[in-house]
Length: 53
Image (cartoon, rainbow, N blue to C red; front, side, top):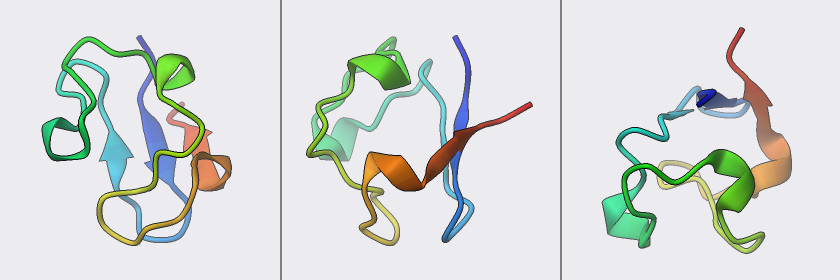
């Protein structure tokens, strides 16, 4: 699964880790995260994330 980086604060969403504090279980692909999820560091939406190449 691909990792995604927040373009505002550089937080990296790693699907192997998920976001337990945000209610996202490990193994959850970025595409499967609810649309109302926000970056746990700076609070921006999913639209501010890009794939890590």
